[in-house]
Amino acid sequence: MKLQRSSRLALYSVLELASRPDEQLSASDIAAKFDVSLNHLAKVLRDLGRARMVEAVRGAGGGYRFCGNIRRTTLKDVVEVFEPITLHDAGGFEPGDKTEFGASLAVVLGEIDDIAEATLDSITLETMLKLTNRVHRQVNS
Amino acid sequence: MAAINEYNPESGITVRSAGDGDLSRIIELDGQISGITKPEYWQESFRRFGGQHSERHFLVAEKDGHIAGFIVGEIRAWEFGSPPGGWVFSLTVDPDTRLGGVATVMFDTICHCFKQAGVDKVHTMIDRDNITVMSFFRSQGMMAGSTIPLEMDLSDLEGRS
Image (cartoon, rainbow over all chains, first blue to last red; front, side, top):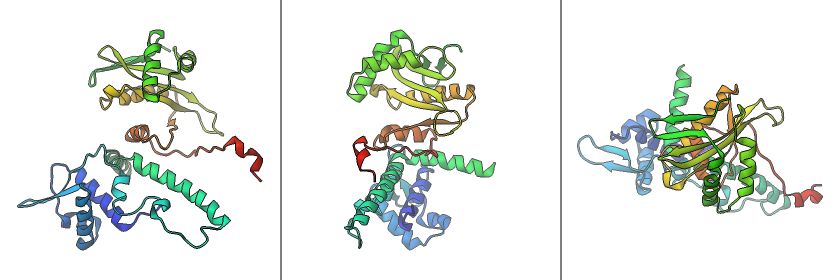
């Protein structure tokens, strides 16, 4: 599975902000860490703000902070702000979809979609931060 | 193997081997969650997994004198050549005590039992629509395993070719 760049950037941003709950981070700090353009990141943060996952804190020392619940917000919640998780949600028809092979291929792709959706929906940001720590420890051991 | 009886001072929860006297509460809790009362199923389950075995565990969590949840699991080695591993196949927590660490303490205890019995992996299988329970297991560090469950409607048996 490959996520769109905006979805990946959104996940990186909310995880970065959620991992530092007592701080406000500037968009340029986040853009520098993940090596992305500030313009693109600004759009992503604006969409996350509309989805009430991050909020901008104005004034000296201001920046962005995560304002959701890390035990409740899932990877699916974040990704869905930017792209449909399943082909079914994406809508539209591709050539051949209405043939007998198209119908059987839809069954197989639907199975993959269902598993991907359940995976993203069952991993909260808190779980993802634990996984990040575990992977980090393994890499450094 | 001695009966399990472990007190967790942090949460105030005791996890211990289930006894005959716990069965009515187990049936009640499961009925509360699933919406179906299954006394015969739990009596049979208790007969198979209750007692003191190193490879089968039926544990209850007690908090403030009440049974707040239960967990059932065993060591299995039947899946197409897989090495023996611990399997958790039932986990129920009283909705009134959720987010109090009951499931985590029970899961830790049964994992410890599996480890003591010599296996190095714990498995479970959950319906992919059961996001609450799947999220819990994910939060404990569980990831998708190498096995994929497959199924078929037996009514499709005649139309396979």
